[in-house]
Length: 619
View 1 (cartoon, rainbow, N blue to C red):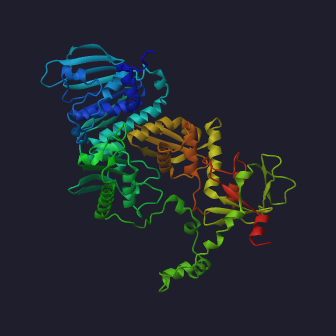
View 2: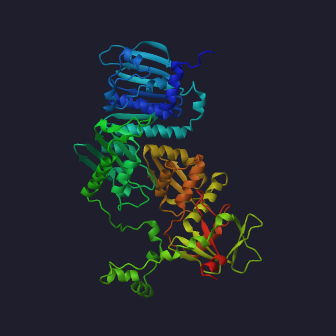
């Protein structure tokens, strides 16, 4: 029988390696930019076309390569950084992986021009499918220019798995920003389809942060700087007011290499404890320098996941450094007495404080706790434990999906009959003449013909808005109300690119936003049922939620936008509602196609039936 084990041809081996190293255009961008930085360049230009699928070109003014080095760079396992095995654990530079250029040459058509300062002529090399098609001397500036065209042309199946141009471009911008943040002393530019997106002059770290993240950060950064024998940490943390509802502008670098570390993120988040809301995330750009032998950077092919020899020391040090910086700059928890639009609309602010209200307030236990002596230690008895057996007595609405609201002649006067889609299922009859009760400014209790409903106001409104926005996004455009005073929105480069991509879909759900300069936008109109005055913040938050949309299911761009909009615009827990608002919310909920849950599956209400209530009290 013939032997069946064979060695793979080099070009196929390189394509397999490329599957690990070059997963998408952004992967090649990362490798090429890091190589340029390692070459001692002071200027690095990135040029892309068709989101990197047609062209990725990196031009640097670094030290260049000799003819032999230029040819060897495309061989597998070629490196200028490692001579002995111990060198692997002492690497401080970026691009040392031997498969990088070989992998790129296996999946794209590559052209290289490079020249050293001491050489009169440079070297031109053309490679396709791992084979050198041409090599000859050429006239070119000092440094290196490498172009990769038609990514995955030799592996069509891989090309088919690439996302839309907008999605791939976002990944490219992310990688570009990470390298640019690591080297603020280098000039970087990014040109996409002939238009310059980034022009980052060399300068200080703070100026680079402001260039990338936006001018709004200029006066909102706190310097972090601590040094010990074991490790150093420096960089900037955003003041508490820069915190976002999603994990946005957070950058960690270890020995100038961008890393992803939930462990270190937690360290910094804990340093901001009690300064920001629990569901918010601080902004920071932090650099850790320590002996490379204390770090294993070969955990993952992209080198973005690393392991520390002693994680607890690094955690404690990062946390302490940020805490110290915040304390040093006199940033501590404080009360904010400025009233935003939501607070100004509350009854307590708008309506006069009458004598009756004053008497009621003075007689309350809360007032006594603040004004009487020896009250600080007093804690009222918590009776919540008495409710621990209630859970077995309710059933969720998920058993009977409810449908459209129907005014039925059979219903009692002043009641609301809520009929299910399934004809055999029983209807829920909300007694509209009975007052609705808001519990903990989060839940609505509504009496029914055989019990009561406990409705979660935020989840219910999220379901209503999701279906309303969904209808608009798929045909029936929502009405827009023109803003009396159009507001201008300034964004960073990456967020501006994302918003530009979302503009057509935003228009379908009622927003009227127009580009106004490179990274500026004018908000001319907002959805008709949205409160005016907070539109800038709502769009900024929408962008953050969209960027960090997390789900196990791959949703379309429009679906993600609709879900983010519904979550953002829903009335929140803690918002006081009038009787009319509560009744409207319940009516709107039961006109939904799927009223019993949010888009993510959380229940919008729970039904307590009369027979269960009787059983609670042993009847």
